[in-house]
Image (tube, rainbow, N blue to C red; front, side, top):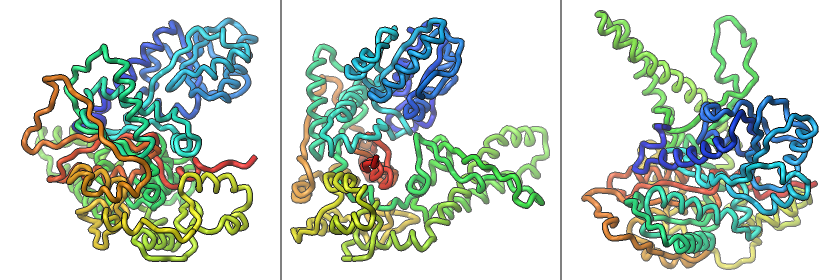
Amino acid sequence: MAAHLSYGRVNLNVLREAVRRELREFLDKCAGSKAIVWDEYLTGPFGLIAQYSLLKEHEVEKMFTLKGNRLPAADVKNIIFFVRPRLELMDIIAENVLSEDRRGPTRDFHILFVPRRSLLCEQRLKDLGVLGSFIHREEYSLDLIPFDGDLLSMESEGAFKECYLEGDQTSLYHAAKGLMTLQALYGTIPQIFGKGECARQVANMMIRMKREFTGSQNSIFPVFDNLLLLDRNVDLLTPLATQLTYEGLIDEIYGIQNSYVKLPPEKFAPKKQGDGGKDLPTEAKKLQLNSAEELYAEIRDKNFNAVGSVLSKKAKIISAAFEERHNAKTVGEIKQFVSQLPHMQAARGSLANHTSIAELIKDVTTSEDFFDKLTVEQEFMSGIDTDKPGNIARPCLYKKNTKIYQTYGYEHILTLHNLEKAGLLKPQTGGRNNYPTIRKTLRLWMDDVNEQNPTDISYVYSGYAPLSVRLAQLLSRPGWRSIEEVLRILPGPHFEERQPLPTGLQKKRQPGENRVTLIFFLGGVTFAEIAALRFLSQLEDGGTEYVIATTKLMNGTSWIEALMEKPF
């Protein structure tokens, strides 16, 4: 069990155990010793649900990354390919299989498509003459991966581009399937709200899937009260703003991948007297970041300006705890101190790590470049007209395409076309600007922000309240009828669906009991938006607790990079 997945109202260990069980069942079909050949992109997501110890229990002896030519030598009976359904990967698999056949002795080959089998991929394997080599060709429905006690992600890196540029509904289908899996485990969600074209399509798919499974009545008492489906293109502004929470800044500067971050090693080298800085480590320091770590759970969602004081207080508490050893006189007292030592040492190590990370972040946030960029962003979001040059990766200011081509090179023509098609770049036509209306109605800019003890979600951007989260907040109370005009301005339809529950499964809310809303971001979500939703969940009079799901955890840089076309 992963303790950090079960701290909230919804025990996400139930989902994790379901996908682990499915994995174990597949491995047991391939009797005998095994080697797994991984599509490299899948190793991170799989690491969140199954460590090597689980694979080893099911006779997995070797693991390799999928690469061209011959596989490394392995004295095993079964070779299993874990891959996404990508045609280019089928070519590499065929190369591997053919080289193994020539090497001998005969192996049993299997392929597991994640998250769905693909007829096109199987046809490619057939054309390459290796389809018949596979004993098992199956799919593994890893649609939603639990990252934390209130966070799920599909980690579909191309979802936004597929949905909004290419008109490809594959990731929407996977989102709908993932939601059906959640309902099978946690009960039918009585109310579905949505905003945006993709949200509408996912809701329609869910309704159709439910209709197709009418024979099996879901008898599980509902855990979720509401589902809110939200298109990313309803709020294109928020991901482009610089996140100012601790976790958000770690992601902005270093990038968090599957709950891990790689950091410059020199900050984490043990300081020895008289070594003059020799033999500094060269390999990046890799740290896991989730709420299993007590200190990280406390500071991850705070505005970075509030983190220093927390670390300072923790340092004093830990120092005082270690000083207690001098007061331990009796055998009982010494024994008690020794029993607490592992926890205290872990707390001291955690504090040292996060102090080092905070120093690394501070080096960036106190730089002139960072200040200038943040000033431009905040003037734009607060409604102050500005004509300062902005970063092309944060397209707040719209220039004529020809000037951009001249400045950045004509190889970016396709990328700029993608940005325009996605709605991130627009020509200045002199038409009506709806942003002031949206900003005022939804209170997207707050002048007086308390970063230390926040009273509003705007603390996550030091003034700007993320539009997406404000929509969720207003849906909860007083309801979307109060903002009909703004909803009509924002892209896509808004809707409500009800899913009837059998008698006996309708929830009778206890006085003071909060609703549980699952909010699904179609196209990606940032850590700052997640922090804002957690802030709302913790409000004493908020009335709603949120569980967050998304197609991808992202920031402005990774989002723009996913839209970029790489020149040949």
